Length: 295
Picture (cartoon, rainbow, N blue to C red):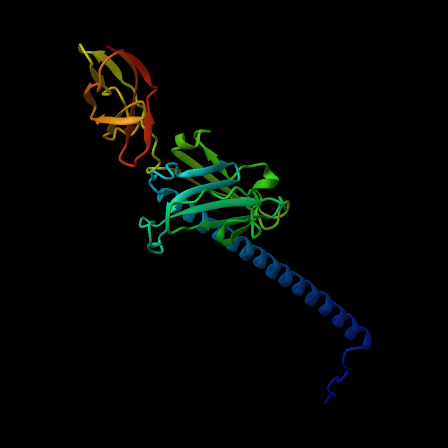
């Protein structure tokens, strides 16, 4: 009977095996670390895109909720710049009280591009309880912007600045003629590396943006001191009905699309007649005055 061979591994074999094990383990850990790093980058990108998408949707809702103009502040859009927009919208959180029973507030979205590769989108608001104040004139974007409340950074990793791309595009350079706004955010958590930037865009037609009416009229002499005033050619861009006010020398003398005006007094005089028209939101159109002599 032969004895069992009890020889083990030599020291050299053990060292070689250990070295191979370390190499394999190191490669495995490196792959695992790379996987976790990539997964972290993907999660960060997904979070940044999700925050930006939420704000694009919120911006669209705010713009669709554009406040109807008021007599004191007839224009709903106060600023329309490539990276800065200010407009009036209805506050969804409840009535503000006092004279602002429609709960209108002023909303601002602006992009801070001090770091073009990591821009920050800011939201700001301005509220009131009486007549609407003027919009703050500051162009500073961020926590130091004077005159605004509710200031908060709502989205980061915006690379519009690095791409030379504006956030906002408008269908008109005239504030009262803007009826469509396009908003686009480019998001990239690692510019120049990894996946390309993600584009998030929305387009909104401003259903509540109102334009003022245009007043025009004619005068026909009807003998003596009687004038036939006709303002029926006045128009409203939205086709809304108009209220008419006739003035003589700045004093109201009558109303209606047509009006028969018997000039008071006696003797020759030169009268300055004009027409003011108002749409339902109290936006006013003023016709140039016409001078007419009455005997």
